[in-house]
Image (cartoon, rainbow, N blue to C red):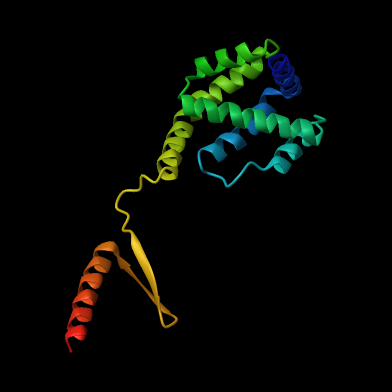
Length: 173
């Protein structure tokens, strides 16, 4: 039963999140939200782990990675669905009944603050990924005697027309 296994996996991650104080959870979420907003190049799991250790929370590498993946997936899918803070919390409660109220409050507050910009960033990424760039001039590259040049498609069409005219003139000579 994959649904039961999936639920157990979620509950295991939620159990790991329950060990975190509100401040630690908020800090881990901020790292992830900054990444999803395009403000950082990635999520620094070593920095998150150091924060946990400084606070005296023991968390093995696998549990830390699972927490980061879970929060990343949660925020990413909430951004794609453009969920409100309340809707995010209700979806999390549907997934597991083990959520402590304090953790849900942290997630609600942070998502309410950062959710709109995560959604906007995902809209931009979606537009870029499907090639909806406006004002892009397509160029065609050619190689001539180990030297190359670029021209737009319109320039190439004009060049092709002139080349055909030259070929016609050379045939008549």
